[in-house]
Image (cartoon, rainbow, N blue to C red; front, side):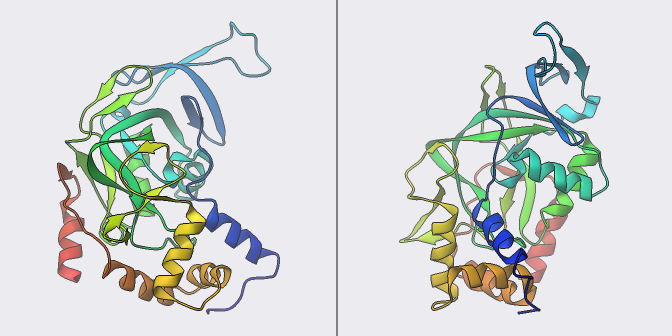
Length: 281
């Protein structure tokens, strides 16, 4: 291990890893700077929105606004931590941006949200999306300025952990009634984490699919038993966070047991990252 965390920090690392994919808003919301505001209405074509009155405002007080014109061009499915305002806000702020993101709730059809066969830098088993005819999952859909989407790519390790593109076979039904065709998404390059020949779904994501669902802690236990039998789970989490080389070895072991694809209807928008991955295989 590359050093050990202070005794006060270790419980925080462990709790953070086990909390994935983190809290999501139950209603449409606007993430603006450090604040999250409820949305009364949002037009996914024009980008115009109407904020609901705040707790200290009159019910008749509303604020109208609109996202930059290009913010509606690439609605992004957020199937994991990007659906959490706290996590997304920290990512964008750390990358030098003041967050401005509309976050909606929706069902993505003919797909399931499953565990990816890798470990994140903060010790969790992250999510990916899997084509699964007849299934559906409740996910977040994000609308943000293109420069913020471009910055978000840096947090997803394109060409290493994820590919970015459009899902042409994943219609998205917004809770407001509109339908989005061909949303953008991040797909894991490591493939789906498998057990008994089937992917494993995220228990924290409301969905209907044929796969067994695990909590994050159960998924971590399963991965720990696969690649580091005999290691206590909490020690496994902390070492993955602090020792990048050891984490990479574990990811390589998981990838050998994963299912990659088929990526049905996936159209890469950053094909150079796929070429980079193939060259490095």
